[in-house]
Length: 98
Image 1 (cartoon, rainbow, N blue to C red):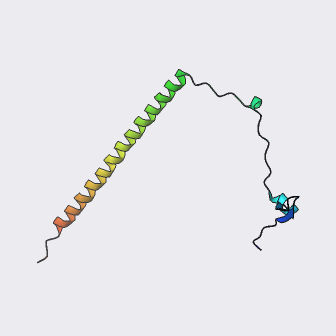
Image 2 (cartoon, helix red, strand yellow):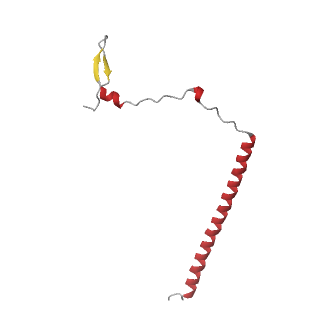
Image 3 (cartoon, helix red, strand yellow):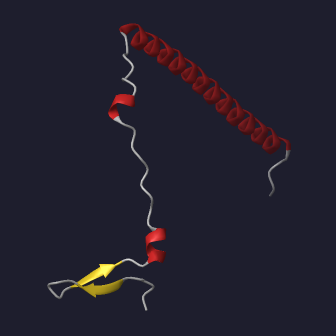
């Protein structure tokens, strides 16, 4: 068996019609009732002031992110220069091997 619990019954034409068993009927998803249109809330209207405030907030966020990016870049460059300075000092302290 393939795990299906459908039995076939013949109708007036003699063709097999699938019939669900009670166990299968229990497993079927129950449909939830939809909210009627008259209960739905109308969409909120967006004003020009809302859009202007949003643009201002986005510009501020963009500037903050850009400043943080500059700080990160400066820190990375500082770390690179410290590493190269440390390496060059350690090399100069030891004489080259012959």
